[in-house]
Length: 144
Image (cartoon, rainbow, N blue to C red; front, side, top):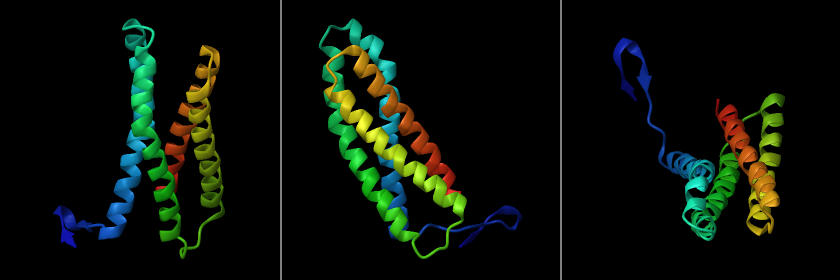
């Protein structure tokens, strides 16, 4: 433990905890942040030709799906690491909502990738994006 100015103390996170949280946050940055970046790139991609947005989407999928898997695995690892601590009912309720949001985000992204019409792509992409952002918010609420 290191003492900072005004008597505050700084503690370093132990090894496995740091790795678990780092992997979870990194995967969330790729999954959620990547979706937001893709939305921002879409108008430019469309101006580059009809296949440009599809090519970008395939490239993003090669990064985002492994990140989603890491998110799910480290999410369960997070739960396992916290299993011994009693939880308030509010925490459990938010965890339940987050679980549903993660399923909805993954399902929405999967259906978005298989959609054949622009309308379906827009609907499923929006569901995936909103569910992902709300799952991120739920994760922040659970961490505090």
